View 1 (cartoon, one colour):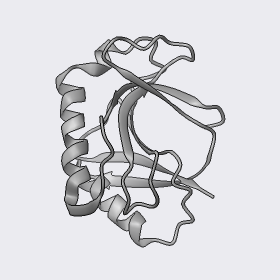
View 2 (tube, helix red, strand yellow):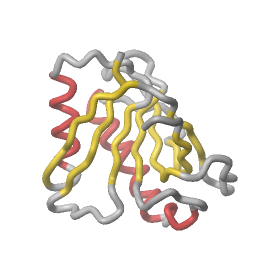
View 3 (cartoon, one colour):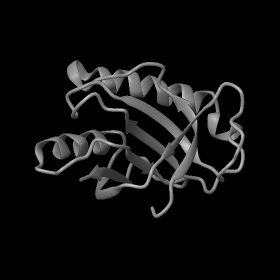
View 4 (cartoon, helix red, strand yellow):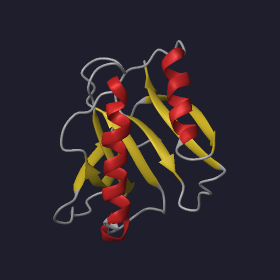
Length: 148
């Protein structure tokens, strides 16, 4: 990514945390709202069929509260429809990790592995990219970690 990226979608209305599997519950509920409400169909000027899940506004590291957003990349200057939210992923340096396997387990396992590794994370805007034509039984999800 060599320019900031604008996304439109849904933002979790409060910060979540990885403690006591709270984030799995909160983020899962936001995914249900996003897909169940056909939110992707309401997003104008999409750049492609991809969906991004974004972790940002960290209070510290991965053990502290953070904000969560699900949405699609759109053309710059796109008006945000009523009831939806928008964020901009700024330019950052990234390390990319690929989660492979059955959804959503492969993504959860990839994050557990990331938390154990010695990555010089910046805790800026981290995100996952779900490609439009993904096979949920044999998925490949790119996870981008903001690094120093």
